[in-house]
Image 1 (cartoon, rainbow, N blue to C red):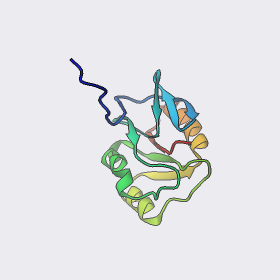
Image 2: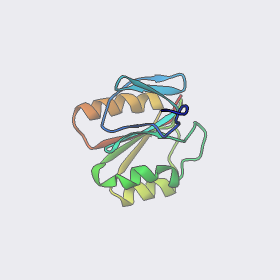
Image 3: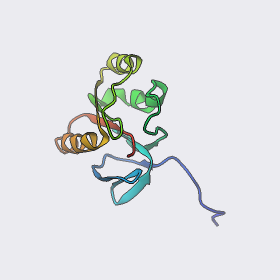
Image 4: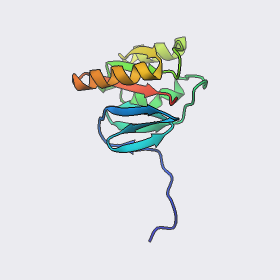
Length: 128
């Protein structure tokens, strides 16, 4: 018998296009998630990063762990484009991942197209 609501990191075990974004979250695979997302080959994970937070190498640990299956990482930096810090770009490049920062809306659209083309793409999407 359940003893209340269990709060856990969001996880969808698979790759799914993003159906909608905004109001602080995303919709995908007939589900909704409040907050930011990492869309990786290992699945869709909740990501504890908010717009304006520093983009650190530690914040991208799950991305680096999946590096063998990722060629391109799209980084949705929120409402506006924010350049990636040099240390983060270097860590991604060292693992063979090309990074492309853009607004979250542009990242969602680009991710969906690349996913439909079966490309080795991942996305780090900051909720707007």
